[in-house]
Amino acid sequence: FPVTIKFKILSVVLPETFQFFGLFLLFNYVMQAIIATKIAERFSRNKIELFSSVILMCAQPILWHRVNTHIALTSHWLILWFIYIYLSRPQKRIASWSFALFWALGTHFYFFIMGLCIFLFEEISILHKNKMQNFLKNIFVVCSISSFSMRQFGYFVIRLNDSVTKFGFELHRMDLMQ
Image (cartoon, rainbow, N blue to C red):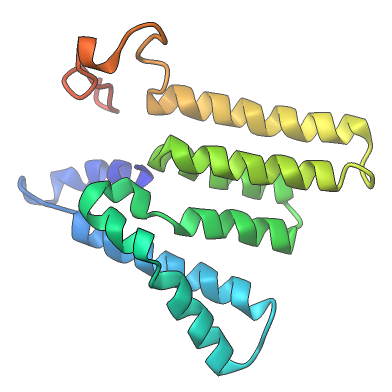
């Protein structure tokens, strides 16, 4: 996770047995609420509707289920972030997409694929406004940044024809200190 990298940097001041999963879960739920609020505000200013929308987004059963099975998958706020970027179409759109996809790659490939699909749908939906040259440039920039990020996060450490069980990915993992 990008969060793990931050805690690894802070490890010199943190206790040796520091456990950050609780903070990570709190961060995920706070981000879920913040981005759900931003999306809901695009459709309504009614406080009751906003509150109901945020509760609905934060009380998803699948989100609660992920807490006990795979903690990285509790980052559902990333999906909301992708939807928010799609809906808001910010000025620095490509920078926003690149940063969001970078964060998703650092969290779980599952989120990256979802974000990449939403980005591609957005690019295709505005293709009639943009020139083909801009379309291809945007795709190239985002894919280049994503490929570099994948390399930095260690996605290419294991060859495709090797199985994870054969070499033990957790035993021989790559981190910032190697």
